[in-house]
Length: 339
Ligand code: BMA
Image (tube, rainbow, N blue to C red; front, side):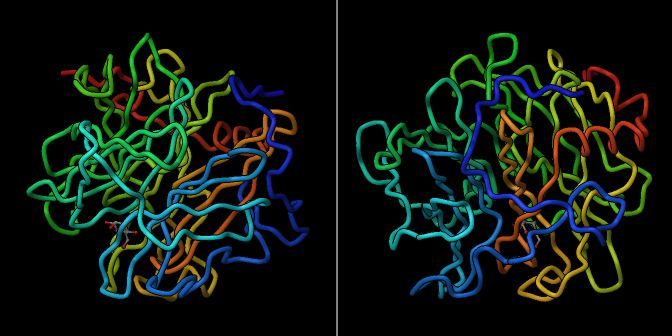
C-alpha cells in the first residue's frame, strides 16, 4: 500500500466513489461538474485554472477571474465543502515590501501552496512579457508581492509544498511570447524565495501523441513514499488547435528533477461538453490536487475549456498503481537534468 507523507487529514474533502461505468483511467469526474460555472459573479465572465487548499476547516482558492473586459486577475474564493464557492468581489490587494499597492496588468493561472506555515500564490503576469509572479500571505488579507523569480518568458510555476535539501523548489516552463508551440518542465531552487538557481531539466514532451507539443506542471506535487506525485498538462496539436490533457508522473523525493515513473497515457482528456466547448475548446488544465492524509483520497481541480472549474477524483492507490503499471520513461527523464 502506498503511503502519503506530510499530508494532514482533510475530513471536509469532497468525494464521490468511482462510478461503475468509469473508464479504466484512474481519474473520474464529479457528476455535478462544473463546480464554478459561467458568470459566477458580477464583473467576472469566467473562472478557470484555479488552485485550492484546505483552510480553517473548509477551503480557500486563488482563482483566475477573467473579468468582463477580458483581462484576468486573481481573486480569492472560499468554500465549506469544496463544491460551492463564494468569490470575493475585488481581486487580491497586492502590496510591495513597503506596503504600496502593486497593480498588475494581468495575472493568470494562480497556484496556491503552503510551505512552512506561509501561503504562496504564484501566477503568470506581464513583466515586459509573460513571466512568473509570486506573493506570500499568512492571513489571506495581506499579500506581499515577492521579486519575480525568472526573466520572461515563463509560465506554469508550481512550488513544492516543502523545502527539498533545505531549498524552496519550483517547477516552471520557459516559453515564448505567444501560444508557445514547445515547452519542457524545469526545476529551480532558492534558499529564500528570492534568488533562484540550481536549474535542472525535469522532462520534455514525449513521443506519445497526447503530449507531443508541450507540457507544464499542474498541481503542487503530493508527497508519497514512492516519490512526488505530479499532475501536469500535456498538449497536442490538431487542425483545430491545441488539446490539453492531464498527465501523471512520479518524481524522486530527494532529487525531483529525476522522473521515476511517467504515465504513457493521459489520465483525463477533454470528453464532456464542458471540457470540449467553451472559450477555448478541449482544455483540461489541472491546478490543484488536495489529498486527504487519512483516507488517501485525492480531489483534483482543473480548468475546463478556459471557462469553468471542474473536479475529478482518484485515490493514491489507484493513481500510483496506474502510473507505475503504464510507465514509460526516457533516459533524459531519469537523469538529473543538468548539462
Ligand atoms: C495556456 C494558458 C492557460 C490556458 C491554455 C489553454 O497557454 O494560457 O491559461 O488554459 O493556454 O488555452
